[in-house]
Structures are given as structure tokens and as C-alpha cells.
Image (cartoon, rainbow, N blue to C red; front, side, top):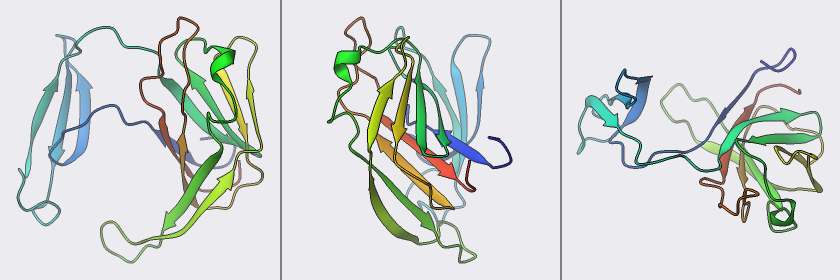
Length: 171
């Protein structure tokens, strides 16, 4: 929760699952176990359920640690300091927002697609937080941020530049 409102954020980190994850847990071996399911009508040609065991292939790189909406935009926090030289006009020039019109069925239609210009990008002095100013929010909305060209101070590129947030009420 952010103040009196509800927010959520997610970041893609894994491709190739057969259906929607329903549970995730780290096992004693350090692997991530992902349970998934489908009712058969979502993807009739795929498995209806199972467990994937995901084993890290090495150290993780610079990533998005968290993201949240603010009264005038968004704040994205990184796992390590970001190089200020990698933040500029091409980093994120707009955000995309839309919502689902609930129709009583799974995955209702997406409506009200809109691109909103980013007016200002400000990196905190420690390089860990990027503030994006977009102006007041329209609610409820799902918002997609695409961060391009971001690098850690070590020179390593941001692993995944996609961030999705739900903004149900004004923060």
C-alpha cells in the first residue's frame, strides 16, 4: 500500500513458462520453484499444470528493485547505483497506460490506451532512484515503463527495462 491507495508492480524476469504462475518459493537448494496452472481453455495445446525448477546460472546483474507511483509520476529504484551518463532523453520518453474493462470473464478487453510523455527524469545523488515526472495520474490504470540504455556505474546494462504498475487510486 502507498498511503491510502493500492499499488502493485511487476518486472518480467523469466521466459518460457507454459501457463500462469500461481506460486513461487525458493527451495533449500537455492532454486526457485514455480507452480503453474491452466484451466485448459487458456492454452488448450499446453500443459494444464506443473512445477518448474529454476536454477540461477550465475550472479544477477543490475535490476529494478522496486517501482511505485507518486502524485506526479513514478520512482524506480535499482539494485545498484546507476551511471548518471546513461540517463537521458532516450531513457524513457513516455509511459503507456491502459486498463481492463471488467466484463465478468478472464482477461477482459484492454481499453483506453494512451501514451503519456515523461516531462523530467531525475537520478538521485546515490544513483539508486530514478524519478519520472509525468503529471497527475488517471485511475484506475495499468502503466508500462520501458527503460532504455540504463547502465550501472560498473558499465553493466540493466537486465530488464520493463516495469508494469497498477495505479488504482491517486497516490
